[in-house]
Length: 142
Image (tube, rainbow, N blue to C red):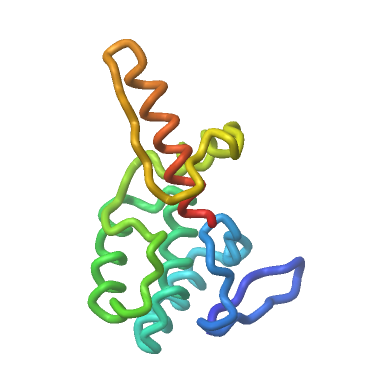
């Protein structure tokens, strides 16, 4: 079971009750040491979703990339059947930027079928990359 802070209280989630999207950030108020303990518990219980939320929260707090990579590998090794599809398989430095860009984009800019096609030219390479990141982020937060 994984806990999330709500004021001074702690709400406990089992893997089946954990919010399904990373955007929910159910562990935002949990301290680093407690997150690491919860991650170890998720590995023991083979709760991929719970472990993924621990990794995601540490990622959003700028945990060193080598730590995130190691945690992802350990989670896949321990609970591959239950790791949610929204957890990237490798560390990407721009994940928090993806959230910022997605927050600024409208829903009308994102395909609804889950597929993405992006034509990139030299002139708009950065803008196209940011639009793609926004689209992917919207997909991850559904």
